[in-house]
Picture 1 (cartoon, rainbow, N blue to C red):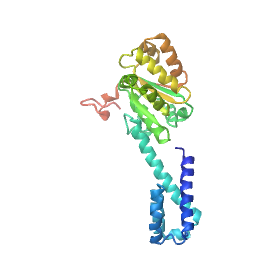
Picture 2: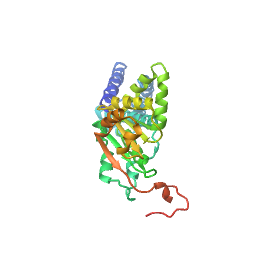
Picture 3: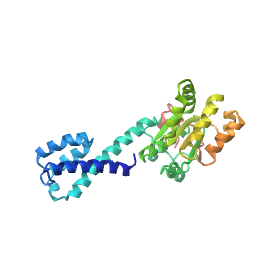
Length: 288
């Protein structure tokens, strides 16, 4: 929910709370009385404003509250409630995203090792304007060069900026998606769920075989997101080899036109990061 709508919702609840205080003869000057707090607590609970009550209780124990205006008190407890809701919303987005590298951050991307990463480009993508503009991103490179980690960092950045994300491996995803055809309205329901996601990450594109059902499903998914959502693809295959992976000229043209034409491209090079000790390799000379 956007912050402005959250503020409106909480403000309505706060007005209800203040009206209760007024009709019950309570004022901001006597709220510091624990008896009054005991009266406010069940109301805050009913209005689902637990953090607002906790913030108010903390303020009542502070001498600084006596120097605050009514509006300053309102601002303080509103801000505390919104911060708590934002934190919980972020936790839900991160949990629902199923990002493969959950600890991946933009700050931890290793630009020292030469592997074709343009730092200004990657960091700009971390600002998520491409998601706001419903554009796509394609990361290609050899196995182990760090494509999935970079995708995870971008996905985490998106979650922290309020976007919803779903991170999937293409082979498993297409298999599970195809199974939805056997369920009553399962396919349409899953398409609707994906349509609500701001960023869909398709990891390991190009691995495995794609059949006719997979091609049809993939086109529906990409078409549904065209102009209304973003897709991030990681692949060991260069883009020029994707048509062969799709194995149908008509479907390949339709899918790639929607996916590639407005995509930011990152083409990574170099050997596997897993060959280095700092990334888990055993008995391997560290590459500086």
